[in-house]
Image 1 (cartoon, rainbow, N blue to C red):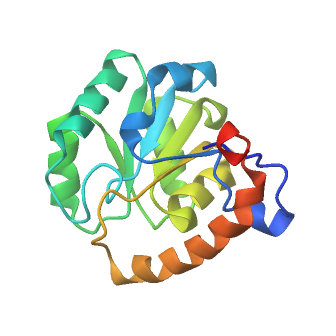
Image 2: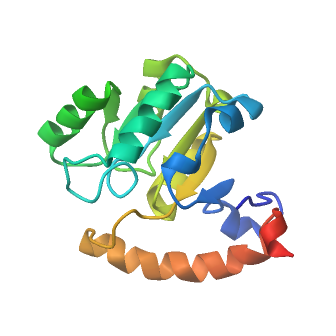
Length: 182
């Protein structure tokens, strides 16, 4: 599902993703290349793994490998306090990471872009939260892909923000740019 980001009222644009997918596995290297995107920043919890899990689903691990083989640069951008877990998943998948103060602050995302050697206009970010991943990416001019959370278990604060996300999604619905809207 794609959105017309210039159409919503100004107050709503900061949380408007460029597109929404059910899973990161729906994102293809061909689609990213068609947008001149060379790098993809990835949230960890409920995007790549279930919240607080070290287990990467096999289909996600295969997707990571496919993206890497296609030449799409990947980098985790995570707020996790469990550095050991982030390091283990990074090593397992061969994906570097940038860690820092919480998204939507831009510093961590800038570090990831520097690490990958790409400018914001050639990068995308995929994550499950409007108030961190999408807003952070939008603040830097990065293409934003809102991913449906892979598991219902999550941080209590995230559960609260999900209610506001539902409200915002209703307001974004008229700005869908895809054929599903018809």
